[in-house]
Length: 174
Image 1 (spheres, one colour):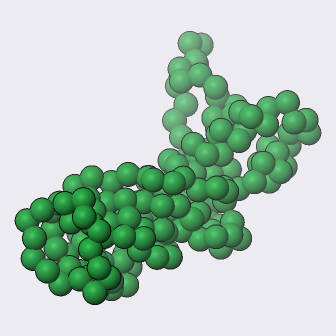
Image 2 (cartoon, one colour; image 1 turned 90 degrees about the vertical axis):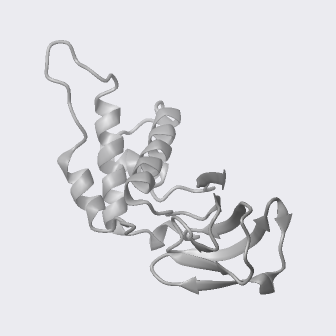
């Protein structure tokens, strides 16, 4: 199985202005750093929850005929399904929406199947408040603790609230 991000989100769930306000930062001197921290925090949260927040294009390759698409709670569309690199017609598969979208092939194959799909929401307002808060906590933590280990103090782990906030919406595959 192979999972990859084809097109990353064009927007973040938390804006630069929101994070500046959260951190009580008045200047724009650290905007580049803060923007980078927001992106990394969103990616961390997505990986932890196994979800996609903002609209993005993903690709999943497997050798199965019943394919549960990772991070597809907010599936927008299937762009294409390929068997061994050849795009197949839409009537060769069906899409079922459960917690995660499932693509079921109507043909048998022992070749690799690749599904390219768009998932996530278009607007930051549609992202859960708990996720936004976790992103803010992570950005604040990383902004204040810019090195991994502090020599005169104990190393700091991620804020406890981050995992507690993200556990509420975490997708667990059985």
